[in-house]
Length: 513
Ligand code: GAP
Image (cartoon, rainbow, N blue to C red; front, side):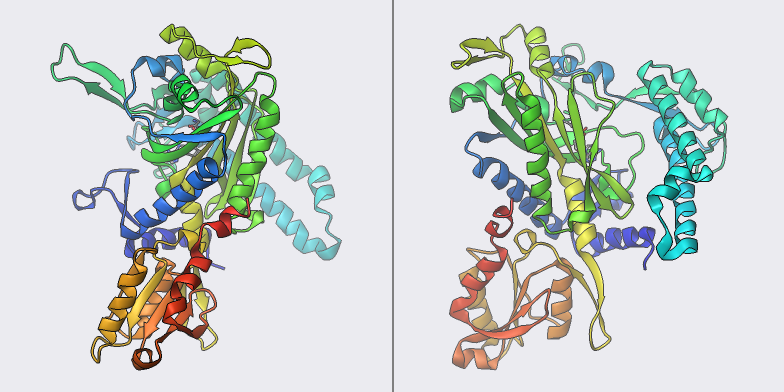
């Protein structure tokens, strides 16, 4: 089996080679943790957005979608707590001059202990064979118990120090554990400092009158400040939701793992406004609904899991992540948070405006509670792309690389391939292209052997290839090749629209939610 690292390298190189993702400003050697989406990447991203938007806005009578500005009044970020508390603890290595997140260094150290624990379990499983009782082994083996206790002690000390803002103790912990710069081995560290993740910018021309602004670090606040505008103009009663897709910016200290952690990324967020006291019921409902939405993509139920937060942010009374099994292990894909009335109350306080709802059933005004679902568009792109990219050995011993994306999300729905340009085949193929282009995103290709053209379409995940040959001119049929089964069948041209639509319609996934 290919090593996870190799799989990930292949994902990155395939994304570039086939026009999905390029390093930003590559001709200037790129910009760290910023990426551009190419012609196929932009299509895939748009289709993911459509899947989310349709599931949220189109299928739910009580959810509407907005598009708020990236730049917001700076007081927004004071009220939301981002100015004071949207920080990561950073530490520099004095020798290598490299910057790290102090908590990540400690977490990576603990991950190594966890690896040792796993190896111990694997060794025992091999030794005992079928008789191996994993639960019993884990509960009683002294080595495993020692590893686990050590890990828990380190992580709980770190959590306590961070909570108490005792950064000196975080540094002391790094020194006690003898954690070294992973690249150079140097243990010559600076003190730990807090680092605000928001990007600053200025509004206005002259230096004296310019206003300091931030690029939004989450889209959610654009929803909160518009709560009343939307509620009044949509005339929705509680419970109702506001959805939004948009860019967010975070000056991540350690931005690694390709598009998993970027400095400019996109979020798809929905704030569901509910009556106080009902929020935990809706939180549970949204947890399940969101998981179902992910599962409908067909990437395998075993690749998702919930991670319920034990330590909650000060504004939340429940929170969980949906984690996905990325090539580098299970990591957060989406967050579901019960945010209480914290945000709206804070905006009431800082703006002096009432952000309340008159509930005719309770006959009272109140600040609604909020359940939020927040998924990273780029992370979802990575989950899909890395899971669907496969090298296959065919029956005849040849190999192919195929991107088996859900057909509704595929960048190109069908490729129109005349066997050759001459003898009128090119013109006939163009006629088919011009007829179907109003319904589907297509590719027209006449260069190279048909086999090579099939391989290129497999590599970008095109569900159907349509080959036009000499017979097509007489009997108005074409060869339709299925990406996944590679089965080729003869079909009438007049049936193409129906067949492609049947395969690629969003209904196929939306109806599973
Ligand atoms: N409004 C809530 C919020 O922003 P979050 O957990 O900080 O919560 C939500 O972010 C989601 O946004 C994450 O689950 C992740 O998918 C995505 N995300 C966060 N930071 C990111 C980054 N630097 N690069 C890519 N995606 C990111």
